[in-house]
Length: 622
Image (tube, rainbow, N blue to C red):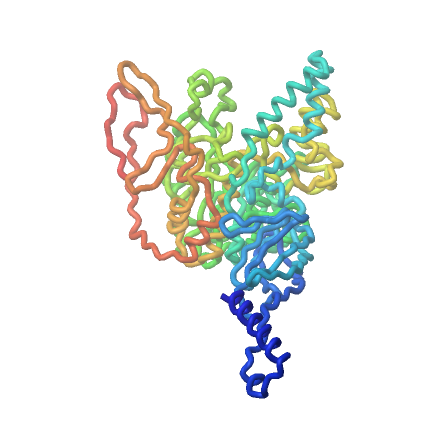
């Protein structure tokens, strides 16, 4: 319409000029139509500073149009137009969304960046730039696929590893270099194609986008120890609150392990709450949560160990303190059901029923690593047919602590969103979380390790490095674990590892999500948190099929695959209710208005504890 006005105005002006050439009157001049022009919009550079990686920031475009025309914006990077998908412009360094004359930018790296933008108003344009600088990040965060999966390798499938294998095949097995290279290239190509799938993560950045990073809650790491002075943990460790439960401990507040070949608990702690945005290492799922460590595992302990490790009086944990989770990345592996103890349940239920002013803290439990390996039982998993049938060798519910609701069992998944090779299945599994494989042909976890190259999984004494070095020499060991071997540019002091895995990793990742949930809404009960996890977790590996066996003339369903239970929730013995989704869980926590009613728990039934000829044919209460 304005273009038409401009044309009419121009025509009128031409007529006026023509008439004035013939000598017009003063009245004619007063009645003439003025010239109207549509001017281009204006745009100026925008400067955005002091950002945090993965944390959104909102700013205003410096753009205007004197004619009041509607403004639209377009963007280029390196001369190429960036097209929005679902309203999101994705750059190599971050994402941007537009609302009116404001924009929200999320830096996905810690790099300085420049975005060229063009403002359009009624066909006329002006251009300027958005300059982004001072992004604070963590140097290893972009390799932590469980937080934000871009298809990265997390130091697995490295060029060093590939060359080391080629050399091994040539020198040890007698292959020609061409044969060795072809075999290794094919293995790597298959591993990359099947094992690296972008987007298969816990959607943690969506939780951060809601302003939730774990502040105000504390997670307790009940494990082999915790290095309380670690450079990437120390800022979140509550001073003088950790416990050394060793009988002969000299400092009762320092659970730092004396092992020199890796400390399980230190790596677990990093997954939960390694400090974020400090320019060191990576970051935990809940990077602003507090940490308390207890060295529960190994050695002679004080008599009160089980009570203290569950937050009983004397542990230093008050019933009003906002404890989010006790992480328990340990368990008992035995190929049969283990006797049940009412005393054990009374102890194990204490955090749920008494802490947080009765709202309860959660016990987060690793489901076990016995899907295909019988451990001390040798060839059991091959002999019983589990390996050939693709069934779990052990059942997670064999362990009595995983047979009641006070421990929340967590299974493990890979960077492709599928079951790991080891994660024990069972009806006890509540949720699953990332953990990965062994860090060679598929990613594991990048997390904290004991500091210095003298201690830890990385460094000179790491178990995997020592074993490979003993078998094939130091050079080969260095090639297979380049990040863990001393001298890697990204891990110069060996304070981090890229090979931590197991359901021992899945549990702390889920503990981090629980910490985010309770940071978002401290009024939730422990049952509310379980309900949120069941309601928001992601259904993964949708094609996971049932395993059916022919028994006599009938059929036995040994594994159901995905089912819908009577409450309408999807469930799978491999994954529980699905992989934890931090963003969805935090969103539900913030708006939570569900009443779960009174909890009803049946008494234990002792029938069926011995083998008999006749089937029990008892219904299990739902």
